Length: 346
Ligand SMILES: C[S@@+](CC[C@H](N)C(=O)[O-])C[C@H]1O[C@@H](n2cnc3c(N)ncnc32)[C@H](O)[C@@H]1O
Image (cartoon, rainbow, N blue to C red):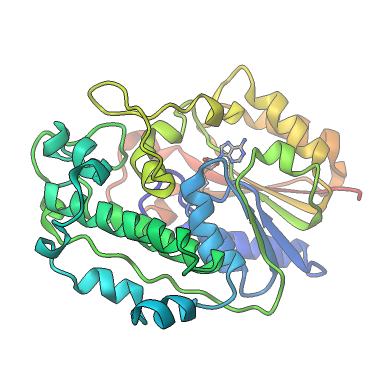
C-alpha cells in the first residue's frame, strides 16, 4: 500500500540489523505498524506484536498478524451459501448494488461526485458502500467470527488506494480524474502466514501500550515530520470504521483530535520518545529514522543512551538512492534513512 514511510523496501536492511544483534530473540514488536509490512515480514521468524494509533492500520494488522490462517467463513457459508465472500463482492455487477438505500451510501454521499468530492468515482464508491454495509450486516447477524470480520474489512481497505483519485495521500483529491480512478474497485485477498505462535495486534498509543507488553525486539518507526497521519489517510480510516462521521471542509476531513501523535511535533517528540524508551521492556531496540526528521541525531543518541547500554549504540545509514526506486530529486541527495540500534538492560 502507498503510505508515507512504508518500509517495504527496507525490510532486508532491518533484517540485517536484527540478525547482527538479536540472534537470541523470540519475539518482535512493530509498535508503529502503519501498513503492517514490517510485522508481516518478521512474522516468518518471530512471535509478532503490532500496533498503531490508526484504526485502519489495526484492521490490516489484525487480518494478517493476529490471524493465523485465511478464514473459512463456515457460518456465512452455512447460512447464506456464500463460500467465498471476496469473490461474491468482486464478481457482482455495480448495477446489482443499486438496491442499497441511498442513506446507507456514506462513500458515495461524501467522497464521490454525488457528495461534491472526487476521491473516488460514484460507481466505485457504491461498490465500497455495498461491501461495507453487507460486512456489517453479516457481523451483526453473527455470521462472521472476529477473524473473518477483520479479514474482510482489511480486504476492502487494501483495495481502495488502487482506485483513489489522489496524488499520494488523502490530504486532497485531484481536480481531474486520474486514470486509476476508472479501474473497478475490488477487495484484495490478503496473504496470511501461520507461524504457529500467538501473535497480537493493538490499536493504542504506543507509549501507553509499552506499559503492558514486553518482548525481545522492539522496532520503532515513528513519523519523521510534523504531518499528522490521520488527515492524510482519513478516507481509509472511515472505510475501516464505517462510522458515518461529520466531515469538515472541502477535503472532507473527519475529526481526529484523539489520534494526534506527539511524534509529529517538534515540541513534544523528544519527551514522547523518551517515555517510549523508558516504558520499553525489550532487550533489543531498533529505531528507523531519517536524517531530515524533526528529532536530531544528537537528540536521538542522547535519549537512547539514557535508557540503553551506551557501548551498544550503533547508527546504520541507508542512502535514499538505494531504497527509492526512481527519480531522486536534488534535495534528497543528502537525505539518508537511519537504522539505529541499542541494547537495553531488562
Ligand atoms: C513511518 S509510519 C510507519 C510505517 C510502517 N513501518 C510501514 O512500513 O508501513 C509511522 C506510523 O506511526 C503511527 N503513530 C504515530 N504516533 C503513534 C503513537 N503515539 N502510537 C502508535 N502509533 C503511532 C502512525 O499512525 C503511522 O502509521
